[in-house]
Length: 288
Ligand SMILES: [Zn+2]
Image (cartoon, rainbow, N blue to C red):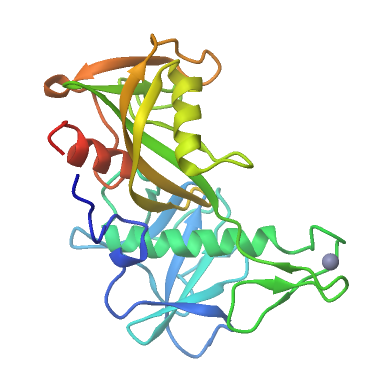
């Protein structure tokens, strides 16, 4: 099986524009200079629409907006600061700005902008989740040249929490095993996936999740690639595997349906920017 050398999936840093750099540690806002803005509003990203293109707002502060969180300067792009902040969900946007659904399932926002926004969202989430030391309740201070923090009271260091998940494409002859969760868009199916448990390898996680979600045993679990998943802070590790045995018994708590689909007649699938779809499109036949 060929292993890809580079994967430019959105949300990974290789999908960022050329002169974009994530800062090693937050900077203070330079209020004299215009900045690029990642403005999050609930599950939306606030963008400027210009002649059909979606752009990040650029300026000192998006016109007329009152922010819910102080802006966090997390990157530089085109010699300008890139700031991320949240807007109250009921704020009315001024003309020229629109709230676009920000998730992996819509593809209207260009791949480079969702990647910038994803990194900003994940770092803002970390700043919000690390205001107090989880050991002693102290107020951690930012470490130099790092997004980590150190508690001045107990000296514990804290670093951004990234939660690993395994996602696995399961194959049997010319069929793929897909699952459906009730909260997904009508008719959509995707791959078995779940969070890593303590003491597990990612391969063991894929095997366990396949068993739990579908009742099926898998073998030949092979790592393919990974994708940053900033909703809010996961890393999806993608695998392919072969069917080893067992009948389908969907997990009633999490799964609405699980079934084998022939490769020529697949149902509605996740968007192309997701690792789930990448695995299906690239490794959906036994030839690969
Ligand atoms: Zn502490």
